[in-house]
Image (cartoon, rainbow, N blue to C red; front, side, top):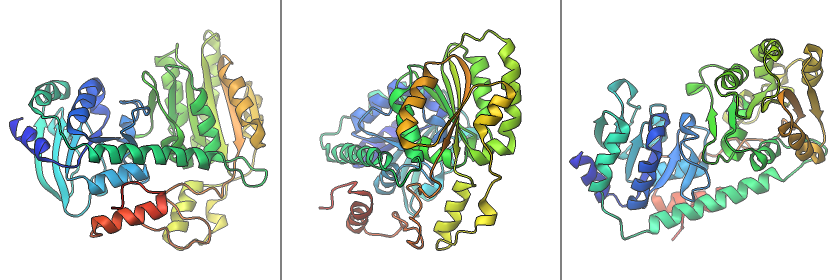
Length: 396
C-alpha cells in the first residue's frame, strides 16, 4: 500500500479508470482523483459508477469509446485502476505508465500491457482505497486536471453539435439517445446491445447519480439488451427501464424475447415504463462501419443488409404498444410520450445508417485515421488530436 502511494504521489499526469468492482468505492475514487488532480475514465461495465456530470470524467475507456478517455490513457504517466476487471489493456501505449490496480481477487485483475511498473492491491476494494487515500498528497500543480476538464467540456459540446445535425429527412441516431438522455427520469436503468446502439449509448448517454446501466461484458453476447431489460424490470420493478437495441440484434433473438414481455403483462401493469428503443437502419451498421474503416470504405451491401420490416407493427401484433418514428421533428415528442407511459412499449426509430460513429471515418474518406498511434511525440500527438477532435489538450 505504501508503494502504491509513493507511485501515485510521484506521478505528474495521473489517470484513474474505475470499473464495476469499484461501485461501492465511488466516494473514495472521487477523493483520490481530487487529491491527485487526476482525470477519470470508466470501463463499459463501470458506466454507472460515477455520474457523467463530474467535469473530469472523460467517458468510457474502450477500444471504441471516448476520444478524451483514449487521450487520457495515452498521455498519463501513472494509472490507478479501481475494480476495472473489464479494462482493455491494449488501450495503453507500448511503453505504458506505472500502474496501480486494486482488485477483489487475482481472477479479477485486468490485463495490463507494457506497464513500466505494476503494483497490485488485492482485497476489498473499498478498504484498500480507505487505506490508500490518507497516504496521498494533494498535488499543487493542477495543469493536468485543467487540461482534462477543458477537453471534457469541448468533447461534450462537440457531441451535442453532432446530435443536432440532420441530413435530409432521416433521423440522426445520435439525436435519439441525446434526446433520451436529456429526459431520463431519476433512477432509470439503461441497457444496450453490442451493435451500433453501443456507440450512441457510449457517446451521448449522460448518467446521473442513482442511475444504472449495463451491457454484455466484453461484448460477448450480441442480442443481450432485450433479456437484460426484462431482468432489470423483474429485479427493479419500481424503476424506469430503457433498452437501446439495433435492428440486427432484435432480429437475432430480441423478437422472440418480446413474446416473454407480452406474457409478463399478466403481472401488475401499473409500473414505470419499460421501453424497447429499436434503431432501424436496415443493416448490421456497426460491423459495416468496422469493415469500411479498416478496408478503405468498401460498402458490401449484401453482407450487411437485413430483411426490412416494421418492428412497431410486430410489437402491435404481439399486443404490445408500438410507435414508429420516421421524422427528425418527432423524436422529442415520441420520447416524452413513452416516458409518461406505464408498462412495456416499443419505439422504432428509422435512422440514418450512414451516420458514422466517432471511431470510424466518413464515407469516402478512406482508412479511418488512428489518432493515438504509439511512438508519436507528445507535442505532435496533441496537435493531431486538436486538429481532428477539436483540441483535447493544450498544444503548447
